[in-house]
Image (cartoon, rainbow, N blue to C red; front, side):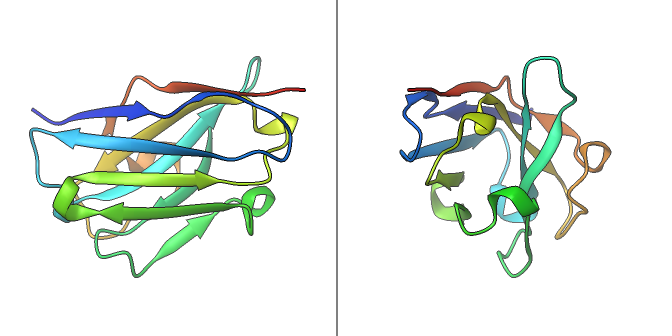
Length: 124
């Protein structure tokens, strides 16, 4: 059974940093493309960043380019999202998702398995 669990969320001041982790269980992460998505209050869930199974293809939403970095450690069955220079508009619940493909478009319906999410709040 494929399970994903996010961690690392919390409260951070503008300009601060957080690293989110997405730990997989019940499957081998090597075979899956992974995405990070977020949903702010009153808004639709949106794609933030996605990474192919071999890390050779990476996508970032324009508003996070240069601030966020996605990476994966297949040996640890974990994908990370390093978030620097946080802005209040980054406040959201962040979800990781997986699909059994080498590479997938970074869209919601491209992913089959989802974690429960972790809250990230950027506030002074």
